[in-house]
Length: 159
Length: 134
Image: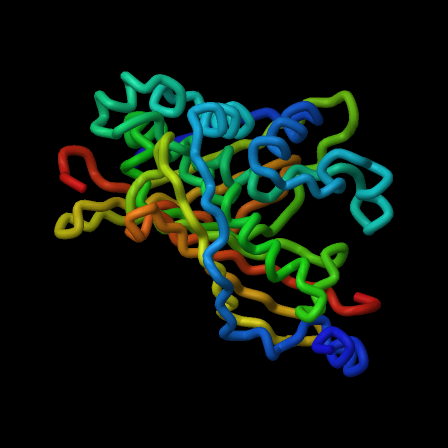
């Protein structure tokens, strides 16, 4: 119903979704292989991403994820909103505006994390949709691990 | 403070590797036809690939300890266009712009340039200084 309202009124996104929070997504198992593959892809060369001994020498329990690795989990959480028909987000018109990571502690192999998606902003501006989300990643003890913020712009029709 | 810099190259294979590693399988990052159908000049790199590649300059600056990178953020201001069969270079430059003795942190400002265009805006990272505890 939300989607229908959004389309009829010509709004690129459904503003009623602002302030919404989703149930925790996951759990996501973090493995050495995921961390090494991500490091390879972004050209992160450090031994701490691949060699558990090197990571331990730096005081970490196991190999450490690169600073933007958490996007792998955050985007899975964000999909709950982006793929929700009621949100009215046309993914083919989405442009990524901003991204930010706050690390409460590093992500290491062996972590089991959940992500809670919050819709901080969802509004129309100048014919475009502005959507700001925040994913709070936490470990099995419920302790905060990473906060991932993302802003997307949904281009309005004909723009 | 002397400037830091690093050049990183990207081709279609690397974008496929990033898509698999990040889970972002948007076809505009591998299929030129799809990219052109939504108004792009060709396949483009994931903005998050560029951010990830840029942050390696910061991890390297803190002695290869990713645990010392406390936060990072960027805006996406331009595209890294990756034509078929070619390797494209992205120049990442950075400098320390702020030192907070009390908090034990430093702030680095980064730029990423491809084909003369700035592809990241207001890109910065806060790191824990050497010799300070978490």
